[in-house]
Length: 551
Image 1: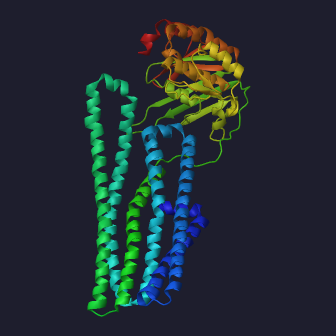
Image 2: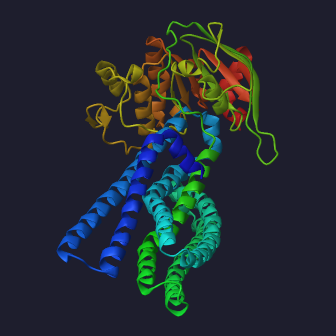
């Protein structure tokens, strides 16, 4: 299994140590059986001496076995801890366009179900290792007692294992279907939670989502999980019954056919009974390992960025003068053999301290341009230059540090951070709490805001406060004023933008508020993926009749 190979590659010495402990445990287990055979079945001499030795062996076996299992479980949890950390870091380093392709439901399923399944597998892995090693050790001991009976018993066990493997292979197949169904269910959960308002207003849509989509996926999940459990339980019961049949076969060969005496038959039976629980546990552990392999494959299929430690980035000088787009073109990846929407080519030069308004209809490419501008998207062709220096993979992370943003789909964090992740400037925060009329609305616990359950307009004000606290050079606001009441919308255009200008901030505001277009230093328009700057009569017309143009 790829999963075990990865563990061995990264934790070779601990893994070898655990295997040695498992071998010691198996050896002690066989020693206990041999002790019983020699001193308790064949004859008992000096019972007062035998009993302490027997109890000592049993206690040592318990200690070594527990140490082996705990070591394997601890290693497994440590591996899962590192794996979870690695995936989170990879998500943080992965291009936004790739994360958008995957979708939040798939990522959440990987971080919850897949990680959980891998964790469960490592908890059960010691049972598999113990079962295999004990079986090998017991076979070696039994071959010394009676090779003939061992050969027949081995054939019986091989049939048992082959039957179990056949049943377990069906478990694996159905677990793959279960994992696929889980992705669909996570999407349904997200629709139910995020669309709660629309679903409450439209019972027909709620019914369609519940009966046609959710129940279909839930039924698929239920069918395959039941089939997986059915084959798993069949494998366990098959193994259980065949072990009992093997014991009966041993006594038949010994007593009826005379292949061995009763003492040897008793030892064989004792050994098989001793192996019964480890073998059943080993068979029971196989589906969890198979499920973990499915989960591991799912994690690899995410195709996230390569893992890198740390978050260090070089900082670009704040005294930059020009940011230039030179024939920049971007195309979304195709879906279902259909080409994705493309934007560009775009040529534009922005000067430090300017305030630009970007207008355009829905789907015209405004948000795509905003993500290209901030470095979240990488151009398919063309160049982005800062003071003549090209922005490429080597300095894109540093370039992004120029920007603070409030996108339309912003996430509202509850902690104020200043430059480089340090404490935000208390004086700056105080000033902007007053500017945003939020001083009486927010409760603080140090730098953490304890009440972020606000109206949408207030959430956007808080998001702007978070952006200002970062003290970045360039502020991007994606339809920020759209959720403000008319009075505060006027405050934004007449006062807040002036405050940002006084701070020396460069601002790009995506706006539909034609009444305030005159507040912009420059007005640019996106139309069907093409960017043009409006001036003179064109700008005057846009200001007078923006609504009709944006339809």
